[in-house]
Image (cartoon, rainbow over all chains, first blue to last red):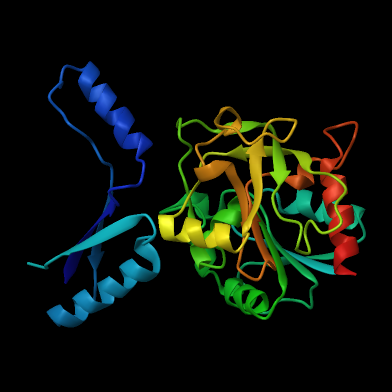
Length: 80
Length: 227
């Protein structure tokens, strides 16, 4: 089963990369952008077949490794 | 005094640290990350470098390596653990010291000498040190210290800030903040102050003809405090 995870920076954390991407977009003529925040995306192919169990395991992975909860939030996307 | 330097895949200041520790009297052992047992040590050092190629977040992979459980146990039982640069990043990822290290504010790798002011001397690292401002070297891409407001209050209340970036007279001003760190923080302790994480490299300042001698002062003082 494939589960996806999106990690984003928390609202108050400065994202200099996002800022530079925003400036570049602006320079390219995409001048109606309010803000860009850069994040991470993971696809985890797990041997687990039970939906809830798989999600619980992935949540544990997020808390223990994939995200640093001081600065990041994680969102687990329901497997299809 | 016995010390251990942990080598992770991608560490590159481990041998510099070995040279520095031996120069000032430590009997040092190099310890591989995949080992599970720590040799008997008075000091454990997590060195600088780019462990695991800085994948995911700097220090995140190394913080889960086999040896780290022993390092964490050693720290929790009061052992002296120092993390320099990538070692500091590894320490924050283990949670032994609070906060995180973000990408430098202006997105550039910084490699230069800086001045830092000793904020707290009631600890094994800086006790009796006869100087307030040290000149050390920094070389990092992710040294922008960040923590939550609650954590900041806590580390300030407990005097856990170890050193701040400053000018050569010890003035802590924004102009001398190289990487955007909150309050110019260059190093922090855990609550008990046996664990120190800092971005600057004292091991690069141990030779008067090559660099400077503030690192020598730091190591001489440290070994005396541990005796």
